Length: 249
Length: 236
Image 1 (cartoon, rainbow over the protein chains, first blue to last red):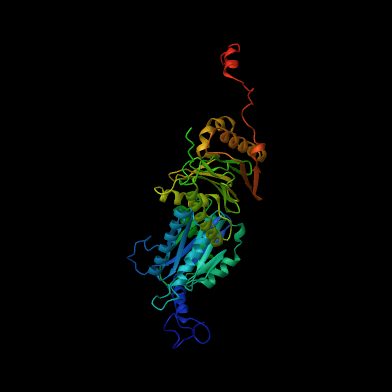
Image 2 (cartoon, rainbow over the protein chains, first blue to last red):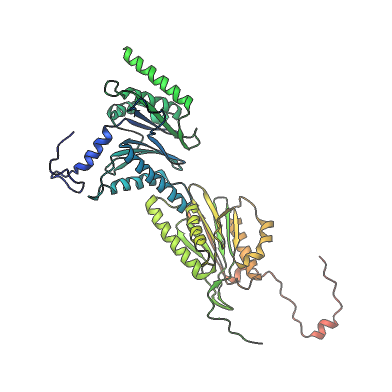
């Protein structure tokens, strides 16, 4: 789907003759080339997982986190340029605390998603700013239940029951569609997400990766937190077993 | 007797009795209708229960100007908030906005407010926001100068989970009791009942309110009183 926009791709304030803004599309490419991020909405909460590609053997496990807590009730998984993603998370955190200070209640996830999307879009309007080179998946649990939103570098934001960004997103989306999410609990969802991420990881092209997962569900008291270590290990084991089964065919 | 015309240049103050009460399914807000400038009653039929949104109302007491301006700002913010959210604001949000204005401007404002309403998440709720800008979520609350005479009354009569009729009767009785004793409260009693179906205004003219005292026998002169048989001392 790549095309060269020679001449019309130098500035984010330039449209091409066929109505595209190439700078935004190039920003989306940065997201497409990063490690896969998968998130699903189960019947009792949200599960998010990231395929964190390890660039150096000397990196400590657990560092360079790709999933961040935004507020007590919500978290954000980032794909694309890590530094850009950090800014988006910082903005989301700030919006969430300001809302609570003014209105006295936690920010509804829908409102948070709209504000983040609006901020990301802002950076596509001026020639002296560049678009964010990262997309985020925002998962939260508020009074209206668990909700999942994805914000792309263009500033577009939709609500999903299952979403994936990054390298293996096509394969991941196919796998998500096979799942019966409305009947799945988060406990099972954690296992499924781990299986999907292990499944889409390309052993040939990328070397090592670390699986990072988080959830917001009834079990976690509707707070966003890292998936507990024992469940994470269970998920990793199940995913590796599923892989071997596939290879054995 | 020195017939003073009162200080007509004094700021309008709502001496006031205001009440907010929750019942099984909603809330009832009540108030008197006297606005005074010193000793002069500037408005004997004022409406101290002001609408903030379709489902949230506020009772105002203290300085009329201060309470009006706070209500106007909060109505404006709530309107914007409703548009952003795409659904009605909760009572808690309304109370918080009122509290922020009251607290941050505490040195300039002199107004005690009661926020009451109904939303789909929490049902009927009452929030009391007195002078300094505290917020207190309560099953019922009273405010204004007339409320001093109602504390004992509510201690005895209040119960959780009343019906709408019981709650309305209670509020009207309480406001009329306060009007009987507080010079700065008077006029008519107004109530607003808010539940899942919206808000309903009711009006109780002064003639319908009980007097809380019996008519005394006319006394002709002091001689009659003195020559009457000495009455029994007051028994409890």
